Image (cartoon, rainbow, N blue to C red; front, side, top):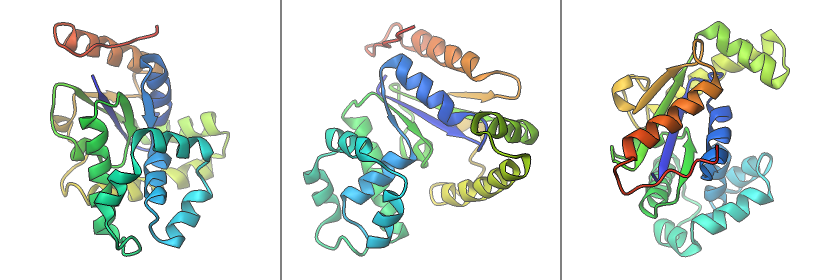
Length: 217
């Protein structure tokens, strides 16, 4: 198994699952900040770099250097690095995600359309987390210690952002279960149970294959 993609409705616990799953499998966690930090390493627009630097730290940069070579970035972007609009970003992102898979990187990728970028393959597991709206709001309240009003605002805003972003990759329903290996509703199954089920199913699916599952638990 080289790649696990985790797609999620905001507040369904996707990032929490990704962190625990990557630790358990000894995989590298590739989240939204890391992918954006790759764009910073490629020296795109100043505005983009400034926006990323407000959120990302030195550890992410070191991980980028260990996973994506500067020569790869140079070949992809060429000379015109400042002309980096939406279309070129999607192209760049797609190349980076595909490259991570092709190099057998053993990574967990959170969001960023990876479920649509990567093909259906025996060494890729695609997970989708959904939950009822009240439960997503409650999850944010409990895990991030914010008010109901703020949690509700975040869920609505991020749902809109997610929908807009995923339309760049696929114009239909991004939560269509046929795109995924496993779909979980965290209103009924907690994150620890989801983690156990994902690892168990990965082991079962690949127990007779060439891909090893290194579970620490």
